[in-house]
Image 1 (cartoon, rainbow, N blue to C red):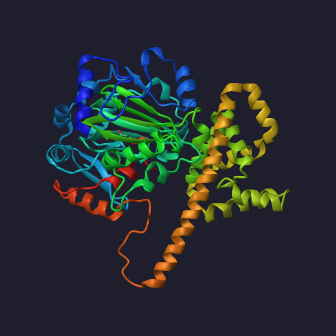
Image 2 (cartoon, rainbow, N blue to C red):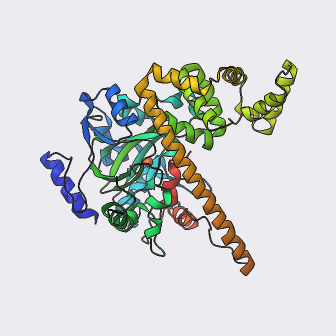
Image 3 (cartoon, rainbow, N blue to C red):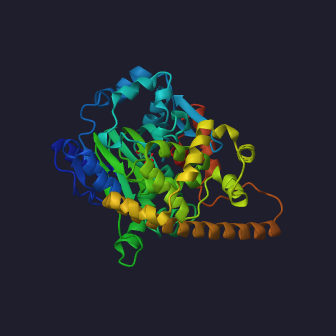
Length: 485
Ligand SMILES: O=C(O)CCC(=O)C(=O)O
Ligand SMILES: [Fe+2]
């Protein structure tokens, strides 16, 4: 299935023909393309980041040394003996092999869904850290709000990738609502992008409702079988639930921008070498804040402290969102409770309270600097109504858009949570029924959404022993884990 598309891509690439609107055997390229030199930071943020619109940027990598250095032969000469991460076992153990081993595997192996080299900490790599100099961040992403946290506290956000033909990324959203840029230095990537919307759930975009028994959601299987069904039933069908989506090819040298929350899946049409980074900026802050305060409670607390010092407008936004949702931050739970009980505490009482809150959680997460900040935060919480007016007056367009997005997101999150609760209930009922009918034999993995977890582990570990399996090998858990934090 990939071959005819690859042939069209190569023709277009050689002839220098325009890529927007190009017609491939199974789809028409529907993404907008822009020139790096012609698009200012402001225009990018307004149109694509606030506008939550994917775009391919041409010309970002024109002067990168990596365009010459990141050729397979060169990389092999430079780093053939160095080890890179190609996955993780289900228990989180890193799977590393030498670049030479990996390239042998990817050129000579016959895996249906090959393993993907996904190295997340190039800067810490004993030899390959020099590759950091081979590329520069596009100008639109220099302000990353996570940079307010020390590097070691930040969720992973930089990856170097090598993937052979047929390798790819299952359909997913990037972690914590962040946006991403992804530059292909070599090779063609086919993308599917689906915008976030209240009724677009994980199970739905994965096409669980359209899967036959025994089918999985690995990238190659998704592109070949599941997605065509989803497109027919839910996109092309006027009664379908998926009116919007984008299909396109990313060519060598092009940079894909994926806004926070967008579902996306990728398949490599030939060997690709790419670099990708995730960012949080004022354009996606509302989404990232909602995800961070829920998924990374302690990190959110520390981050809020930094925002207070360095980006007061966004700090206010975060606090307003918390107020509106009655969300109590991790650290401030006991503090607020105590404040409600004893509004006029003495100094010593208040320090006792904060001590006991620390021991009940993780004291190492709270520095005394944070303590001072949290005090200031508590005093600075604005009244939401006046805060809203204030903000709108201050910079109408910017925040109106953000607030609108918050509303959509809150709705989506509530709907999602409801769905999750139902799912949990279903599982619990299923479990009860099962334990009634059978008491032994518990080999099966019961998590409904993690397709083939233990199978993947076995295959990954086989490979770590240096075997290029000629059987169908799976990498889905490997891929799924890599952009989580
Ligand atoms: O190039 C790819 O495989 C896509 C990468 C991606 O979407 C991700 O890592 O989140
Ligand atoms: Fe992604």
